[in-house]
Length: 418
Image 1 (cartoon, rainbow, N blue to C red):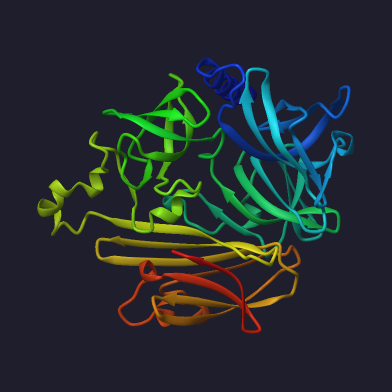
Image 2: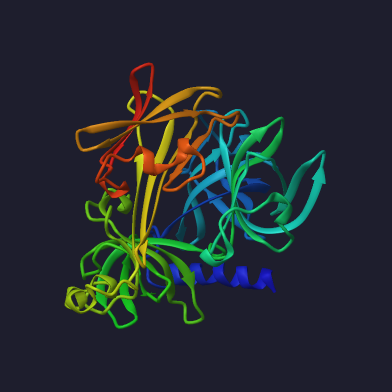
């Protein structure tokens, strides 16, 4: 049953992409990471690789334009072997799924990401091992495990992971094994589709999207959709969601990319909200016509957030920073999180957070054996070093953060602006 459902989703995506695109045009771009189960090399440096996406074997076409990289070097399809873990950027074409870029992940530094259903669990030497997509992944005491849905709580113990759980797993290689750095439990991402394009019309149920690359589809917005920015005809948006039985996409998230740089989150620091479009391009939560009537209604939740990339002109270290602000019935919850990747294990960075001209040191971040580092701050946290209340300047909250800097020995390694 699960196999049939996933196969239907993928076939539906193909039908959707093919139905309204010209023969040579690229369709919607898709990105995924998976294990290679078969390689077929035709004449020259072309052929196909077979990977598993949500338990369905999918053939990915490698043509003369496909860029293949291993260890920073450009290579050919002959280098790819069964069992390799690859990261793939691809697009839908009339001949099938065609790879734009394939990256063979290097065990020393590269990260992996898997999405699927846990098919087995085991305990080996006090460590939990989960199996998904035919791959064993180690889970240790440093693995951050969370569960989707506010009603189910946030933190999850490794022992509570069970067969059948849908998980999104990220991590790296250690001693020849995949080691999970983060696991997110929940089934919303199963079969997710990511699209971007231009809104051509607003409807009662959502809007019509002209897909970047050709074709049109209906985007459905419901009470669970998170909308960032103003939805109006002509707006360029990023959409993540799932197909329904009518082949429309029910959006989990819609982000308006105002400046067209491919990252809509940086345009909507204070614009993230959850609510259904009212048909005029605005969210019901933000409708000015209701402001006077609801100005004293404390039951209306306020929830905003933003995410930025941290970048460097000279370092291979990458990262991101994220803020969250929630006010429900007068109770304010704030979060601030920073994640780093591709750093040298053991490196200690200083985190500097700016509120306009006021720069505050938020302590240090230490890189783990996987080249990753992560720190999360909350108001009222039991750990004084992670308690936002003591770190925020008087009168400021996370919405007032303007710049993040990652510093070592007085030099800025990474930075980003909200």
